[in-house]
Amino acid sequence: MIPVYDATRHRGGSFPYAVIAIIAVNFVVFFLELANGPQWALQFALVPNQIVHGQALWTIFTSMFIHAGWLHILGNMVYLWVFGDELDADYMGSLRFVIFYFLCGLAATALQIAVDPTSNIPNLGASGAIAGVLGGFLLVFPHDQILTFFLVPLPIPVRVSALILVGFWFLIQLISGFLSIGVPEQGGVAYFAHVGGFLAGLALVKFFVDPELWARTGGSRI
Image 1 (cartoon, one colour):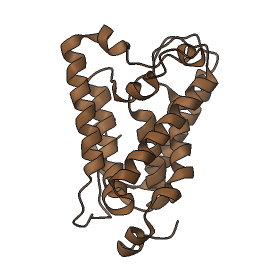
Image 2 (cartoon, helix red, strand yellow):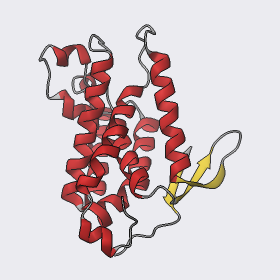
Image 3 (cartoon, helix red, strand yellow):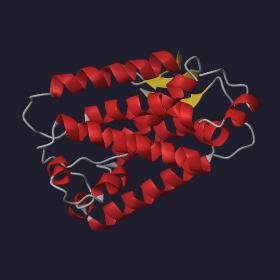
Image 4 (cartoon, helix red, strand yellow):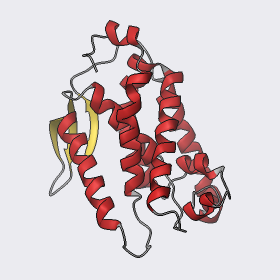
């Protein structure tokens, strides 16, 4: 599934400065990865076993900006743009959005570590924090119609409500996460980071939405 844009809600004159800045930083770091190679990138990835032993604690933050390849970063940034721009520009403001984003990222990391604290597999990517953005979006705009491309068997554009689209995405993460428990370490997707970020987004969004912006843009009550 590739979301394209929110077909229901059109932003006003505000500009999503925080979302643009986060996307820009991610791409700058990714180009540094391409220039310096995978070993350079891995020193900024998070390894749960190191964190629980108090080592390389800076990777809690740097890992949110490291990606494994073009598909990884493009997919993450598309989701951030589609689901983050309205929260940033019209409902939180950029400073609140940045704080919200990183808190969701921290929650994502915390749950992933809690599930498998002895893991030595590097964790990287912005998807945990972006999962929090999806959770916040779902709570604020559950009935918005998202134009989405379903790629199987052929790319077909369909309008799907956020409740169905994001809800289905979360269900897949939750099921995949539980199925991965006990499986020998082989790398792959950090499903519980997605679950942790998403739940944090649901829990935290009401503390970050600006009440005046909320009322002025005609949002429904949380």
